[in-house]
Image 1: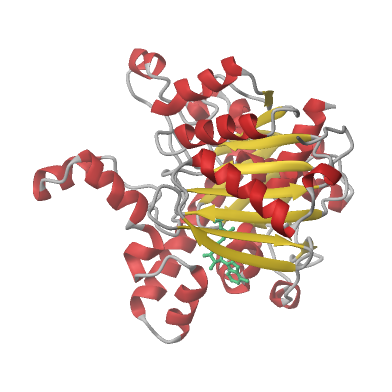
Image 2: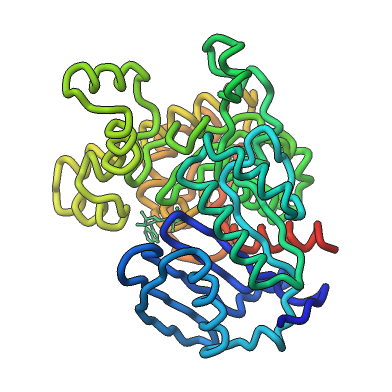
Length: 401
Ligand code: ADP
């Protein structure tokens, strides 16, 4: 049994199809009491990594399903701490990728909500069933505390219809809920709010563009705290070039690959989601490895870098036109936070549009939120570390409290 308190930490759970990530975090201070990953669920040997008290414990064991993953999670806390009983978990917050048209805010989970998340599985066949499995298992094992679902799509529920509508037959789109949803919303919301707070400005007064550049990459335009554009679409495949995802391609490519190579839709899906992006262009999906190859003079790595930058500029320009002016440009996530060369390449030649980099500030390594534009830059360019777990914990507590 775990005693529930309203001031205790939140257990944040992110369930994927074969992995489960977790973090025990104090919403107020952001202190991380423990974190971990359970990987290779459903394979003969699963792996577990748990971090707490400045130590890391790794182990391997079979983890047939998400129920077992939750058992392993509890076992990690029992063996390596902190003691969940003493910690007094206030709630469990679940990251759910697709809220479809149903969910535009975090929601307290009950049986009906689980069914609704499951009903959206057609829109996110890889993600929502895994979230449902994780939620069911977690509710079973943490039955004394409230569980909250926080949706990756929620921040983009405000997109105007001209932004979210695909130019396909309207009836079809309506019947099958085909539209642009946008993803990574928790991160886009968190960093854009952080940027406003850091600058001492009212969130509602700022036009912002956010570039979330991690393994998955997405751009958003935020007018006065309200999302008005998102680069990801019906699925998280659209938009920017990513680690293994192509981002935008001509939709005719599917037919071409089918006609010329006999590829099935499933094979095309795998090709575009898992074998494309940086990996498809240069053979590696990790940006650090790409940079090493590029520094070593590998031309395909240089091309991958250039295509990645070109696409970002493409969206930056489009969103600038939509917003009609830009106060803040934010770089976030692994690549956005840590790669000065990428940021410099994106901002190269944009002084005429009011964006000017301070090269020394851009080069400086730091884990803190910071300005990297020059004093004369009209647009403030910021690096803002994202923290989706903390954002989920805070939204969970807001709802529970
Ligand atoms: P995810 O989308 O899985 O959360 P991250 O936000 O952690 O991914 O981003 C992963 C990407 O960020 C990888 O391409 C990685 O190379 C890059 N990255 C992470 N840390 C650094 C770093 N310190 N320096 C350069 N690149 C980094």
